[in-house]
Length: 208
Image (cartoon, rainbow, N blue to C red; front, side, top):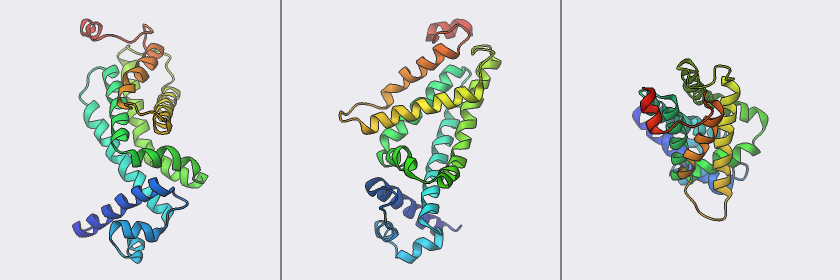
């Protein structure tokens, strides 16, 4: 894809995210997305075959950016607990700073058909693998329980983050989503660490 085509594609994706968040996927018209992107209606179909493909592309693009940001932060972290905390903090911070993305991921996906959710699920798989890698490192370093079910724990952690974001989004009173990261991670660490508690910075220093 040439630079000019890529720029126009990004404009369309940005516009689609905004329109989906404002009106909901099912009520969003391609013509409105085109207007928001500053392109002709037919231009949309030069890049995306349908509104469904546009939704999948929006989420794939934005989730890829989120996963890469998480990966860059955790790849050099020696301690898996620090890595989990960084993952959760970035997840919450990114969605707090992009409420449109939060609305689409937390609300619109739940109203999509099964086939569409499966397609979007493929885009989330790299994120799942990243969380599993961090958990596996914790087991290998004997910081997390040796009998830890990696896949189940990943499901539980991601599900918890998902629910915290949804509650924040639907709350009638404003509060910081990013500030919920420590509480979320500490809750899980108490259940998965060999000692059954969240290690303090001083304790981790002694371990090293």
